[in-house]
Picture 1 (cartoon, rainbow, N blue to C red):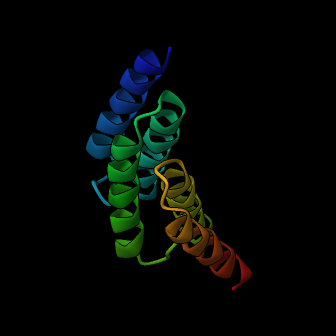
Picture 2: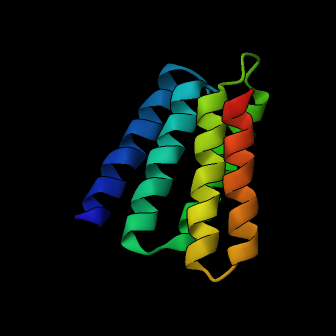
Picture 3: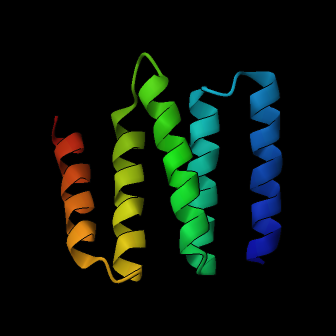
Amino acid sequence: QYPESLLHFHKALEIYEIQFSSNHVYVSGSYIHLAWTSIFAGDFMGAKEYCEKALEIIKMIASKDQTLEATVYFLFGIINGRTDERHRSLLCFQKALDIEAV
């Protein structure tokens, strides 16, 4: 069912990019959903790419959403943990916590 979920999230992404803009919070949220689904499907490189895109958008948004940014770093932590980069994983989890603490 993960491939079907990815198709739906990609469709939502397309709609949001048309309806809003490519650097809208909904677009970054779609990338986060794609990252989560890719993690569950075992596609860690794909998940990492989606996280990078989401983070790029979040950093462009004037009213930067700290929860979204922390979520992306949390996902990076999961990805790094699953790809045997445990030290990097811990750094990402710490960054997520630091962002949320502000």
